[in-house]
Image (tube, rainbow, N blue to C red; front, side, top):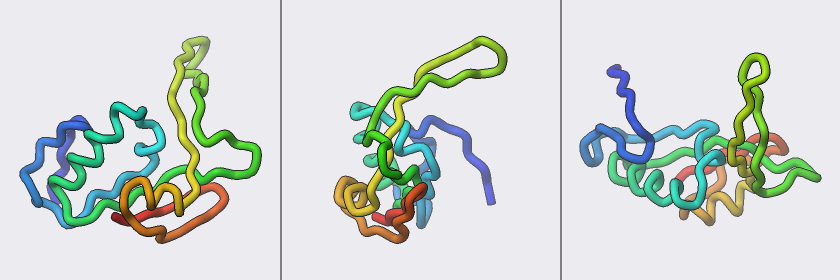
Length: 108
């Protein structure tokens, strides 16, 4: 199986070249402006999109910016969303496959 490295918003893969795009813990890091191109690319290259991402335990906001530390004192901010499986399925026009406290899985 070939491995392809590319930008998730501009994939170097021809139309309908793969059966499934499996996106694990990336969709919840995408901002509004990034989600549309990502979904468009996934739909362009694959028949199915499966998204696995962070669930939403009680007390965790649906979306927020987090501060992360990268070895030593270097810090940076990342956008983070937490999902309810039904809401994520609705967002990507799919159906829930798994709905857990810490992880959800949706197929579209």
